[in-house]
Image (cartoon, rainbow, N blue to C red; front, side, top):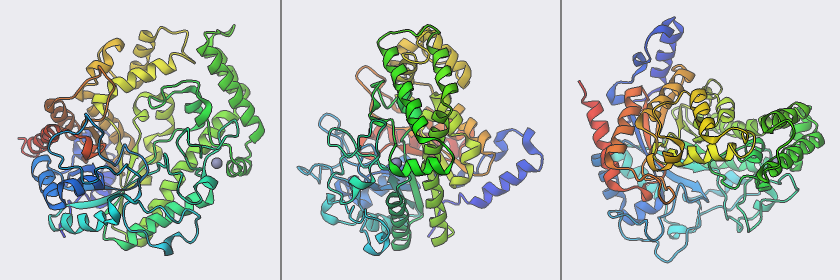
Length: 508
Ligand SMILES: [Zn+2]
């Protein structure tokens, strides 16, 4: 089996170069040889059903330069698997083989019960595709072509109300409501032992039962602080308390073990939520919005401590997953997807610090999706500008954030969704990540290929995808992951990415 030789050894070698006093060397010295690049793509199992395993692998290899398939193997979300709905069925993606059957999700491989003894989440086998084991089929065909296969695993349980035991694993919000509620999406508690045991069982199962090359793991959930402020471009309804979580008994025990007063924490979050609600009603506190926010944080340091604890719970699962993989086979690799809020949100930049993440995986994959980023960044400015920075005109807040985040050359805020972000954004984020990890792990830039946007927002051209892909490689990334899922991608954009990869490999 020929694998793209993006070995950890070469990162260690690069790391050694750096620690040997080469900090002043340009980052270009870390640039991988063209043959070392990991060119990945996220593909859901339905695309292999619809287009045929051999035909799709050949197309991706020949036209898009792909040498690594991240095959979505576990999720209940449709950002990572499932065909597109009417109006989004782009040409060239084959017949809808799953026609008439609604997307369900779950484990698309064949689960082996012996790995799930320690958890109540025993039955997650996806009923989609009539039990056909796409992972086994893709592995065989991809390895024959010298392509690697990672299992795409996402912590998304959206509407998985029929999974036995899931209700006991659901998060509980600030108001004591379970997220196991048909009017919302289920989220699971990272401190619940059943949840941890499930992820480790799934990891052991897939790594032991299939000759895979690794995992691409994704968990985009934010902590209670970010959610209380609505400071995420993914949660457009600011003031929604339903995801200020988790406040279940497992979280209470975790807080107590760390000396964090659980009742004070809840009081603090209630104060924060009241502050947000008042801001949305334009009820300006006497000291102004920002100072009042700081007063709340000073009075309740538990808010920050608890948010950090929630984040640690999320990261701990990644660490244990990585350790478990390595205990099964040393050559298994983990790609850890980092949500796009690491770019725009200064709080998340501080939390998801690269210096803290480098040892969690062989590769980090920041979601630097530049086309939809225009819309997402603008949404973030609006949400942040409607609460703690409500006293600041939003254009000025946008300018301030650009200074803080080291961005320039973007369209004005009012035109940002229509303009998207330039390819230079992808390069800046790749360079920032590379500088943060200092050669101790690889950076794979997440490239936006038809990530859905709202009406009136930018629709990317093949030249845009070319420019973003080339910019990532030129910045020194060890590769790219074409995202989010193949079934939503226009094929001419993928060909644009393929041309960029080939041009970069052949540059003089
Ligand atoms: Zn909990």
